Each structure stands twice: as C-alpha cells, then as structure tokens.
Length: 238
Length: 336
Image (tube, rainbow over all chains, first blue to last red; front, side, top):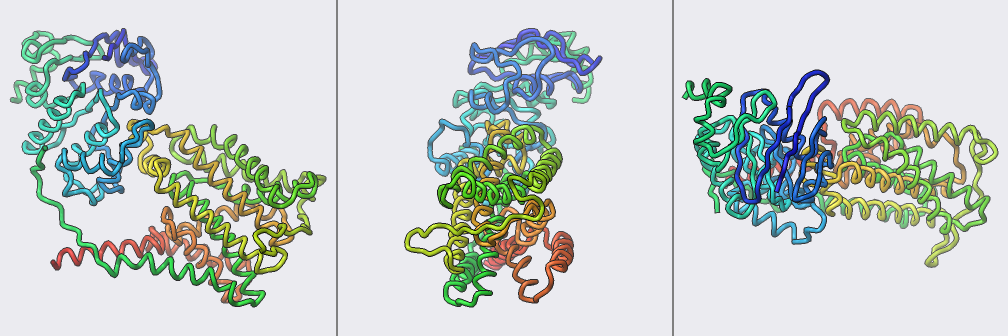
C-alpha cells in the first residue's frame, strides 16, 4: 500500500532523516517508535504531504505521491491525525464530523454518516457540545473519527495515547481495533510502548533519523540496537 | 459499538422562547424592509435604499471575513469597480443597465481571482490583508488618475437609471429602493446558501484550522479564492446598483477607510452570523443618521462603538443574543 524509498530530510545542515526505506501492506497495523527527535513526526509530515523530502520518494498504491498536497492525498484515502488533539474546537462534535465528510465524490448523506460515526465512537452524548469542551480521550477519539469519516483507508495516528488516562487508553485501543477491523490500514507513532506493543502487529524503530529495526513487537524489543537506542530507559522506567 | 468510559455530557433541553429569538429578529427585519414601501417620505426611501445597499455590502464582506476567516481590505474597491465598470459600459459600450451587470461582475471576478490566487496561498492572514489593502488602494488611485476614462478625482455624474423591469419604474425613489432591497435579499440568499453547503462547511473548517482542514481533504487555497471571488463579485453588484441610485460616483467610495468601516459593522453586528452584518449596518448608519450627526462624527462614534464592542462583546450583538439563548438552555437543563 505504502512504500518509502530512500527518504532523506535535512533542514540546512541538520539531518533529520536519512535513507528511510520501508513498506506497509494493505491491512497492516504498524507502530513507528523511537526516542524524541528521531524524526517520526517529520516522516509523517513527508508521507502525508505537509513537507517535501530532500531525497527519496513516497509511493502510495503504486503511484509516486512525493510532495503531493495533503488534500489530494486525503482524496486518495490517506489521512493523518496530529499530536495532541486537533479538532475544530468551536464547532460542535456533529459539525466536526460533517466537515470531515467533505471530500468530493462521497455523496452519501452527511447527517446520516455523522450520526453513524457518533454512535460507533461513543460520541453521541456529546453531539451538540463544542469539540473543544470534550474530555481529552473523547477529543482524541473525535480526531480519529473525523479522519475515518473522510473515507480514509490508510490512517496515520501521531501519538494518540499521549497524556490519556488508563481508562481512556483502553477506549482508544477499542477505537483503533475497530478501525483496523473494518479494513483500515494503520500506522501509529507512539511513546507509550506498553500500549503500542500490545496493539500492533509490526514495529519500525527510528533512531537519529535512520531505521534501525523492523519486525514483530517482541523481536523488536529484544533487538540489542533498539534496547541501546531507546528501550533501555523506557524499560528501566517500567 | 464502542462505549465511552467518561461521564455523560449535560443534557441540552431546547427552550422554546429562546429559540424564537432569531425568528423575531428576522420578523423585525422584514417589517423594516417594508417601511420605505409604505411611508413614501423621500427621506425615508433614500435612507432605506442606502441602508439596504450597505447591509448587502456588509453581508457579502461577511462571506470572506466571517465565514472563510480571511481578512480582506479590498471590499470598497470592488464596490467601486462594480459601479465604475457598469457606468462606463453603459456610457461607452452602449449597453443597458441590466446588460452591463454581467460583464461588470465578470471584470470584478477576474480581478478578485488575480489578486486572491497569489495572496491566499500563504496562511496566517496578514499577507492577504496587506495585499488586498495595497491592491484596493491601487485600484482607487487608478480610478482617481485615469481622468479620460473615469473622470478623475472629481467623480462622475451618471444620468441613467435602470430600464423598467417587471413593471417597476426604477427612475423613482421607491423603484430604486425595491432594487436595493432585492440586492440585499439576493446577497443574503447567496451567503446563506453558501454557508450551509459543502463549500460553506469547508470555509468554516478553513477558518477554524487550515492545517486540519487540509489533512481532511479540503483544498484550502482553492476554497479561499472561490470565497474571495464570490464576496468581491457581490460587492461589485452592490456598486453597480449604487451608481444609478446616487447618480454620482467618485474614487472616494473605494477608499480603504470605507472597507475598514465595513469591518467595523461586522464586528459590532456579529462576525460570521447571518444577521450580524445587517444589525451592524443599522447601528452604524441608522443611529447617527437619526441623531442627525454630521458624517465626520459618524466615524468617531464608530470608533468608540468598535472599541467598546471588542472589549465587552467580542461576538457582536447577534453573538450576544446567541449566547443568551445558550445560557437560557443551560439553565433550563440544570433546573430539570
């Protein structure tokens, strides 16, 4: 579904990504981990068209889409969420979902689709509340629901669990499993390794802009390079 | 089905009386619209025509500023473009008033696209405000200095009135009022239709968060330019109607001061709401007019009113009414 080919990125003299090459198959649920500053979000920005890489290319469904505008990628089914909870804070939850169903060509009745999403994601009780007034977990859920109501088939989540309570993380896990179960391919950046490793089928580890490991979660967590780069501290902390 | 683990939201019980508030407002608006048709005092008809044109202008400005969230300072310039284009087409191309409207609107639309496309590619708003300010001034200076065509800074007398249509004689004061009121209703209709369409939802999303809107598949630049073109064309239409009403146009009507005053009307009335621009126009024009204050002092009053509104009522008069409605609903919900 997605193939990254030698992606490199530098800002002036600062190298953020070097020669990142990996692919994601349709239907996969992939985690992207790495210490702060490893270049995870930059990689997301490049894939979703918000930044153009200085080297390499992004191939999506057999088409080279490097540097293509985000709205064009969204029209092709690739949607990302942002760190923190990015919603339209002044619009009601229902209005947010209506906006997300904006893409041309998807002519189904907006209200019906918004109602469906409200019910599926447990947001119906908040339907007429301003999105900015939602509890953190529901706001995160709304962000994912908005991405999915665009009709996304490839969803990229940037740190969805950061700052959530254990209960909220459990709800988030259900949301992610629901999305994956209904055929969406997912790529998730996450710092909370316990959450991520229990959730994904495959993990890719970025360290200082380079891909250092790629495989099933338990194999990756045993990789000495990964432990040295990242997991040492995280595991020590528990 | 995924169930939420957080506390349920406070139930919202609609309050019937609070819900009637906007309808009451529109009823008052309809009554006001009818006044110049019943009272045939020349002064009332003149004031009604002026207010209808200004309200139409403010309503169309609300499309780009209030709904799309892009700060345009060229609205008065497009108002003037519409007036000059229509008047010059009638004078030099031998067109009738109605026939001049379409090419005049096309000129305004092409100009707006030419200014908007480069200006709206940048996010953040300040570029767009500066570029529209500069282009608006450029157009005003063009009108003031192209003496052969526009008559220069002294302005231009216009001897024509629109040809009769549907049995209405537009050479009379009341005829022009009907035309101005029709323009206001048309503008309101267009803006309301846009607001509740897919296009309008995209504009609101862009106003709230451009990056998020783009990530959800909204073509940000294209939608912003479309809103600017539509808004500027509606301004030009108002200008084309203003020309035969006033019988005189001058580059003064294109000054940035006028554009800023319109922004002031939006702020006072309630930016982004449908009724706000009308309420703002009424407050800005009607109150000083009824107090018979000279034009000079109107801007002083305007300035004071804007400062007070921004400090105490940032959502404007209509925004206050909406807030009151929400509070009523909330208190009803708590009581039940």
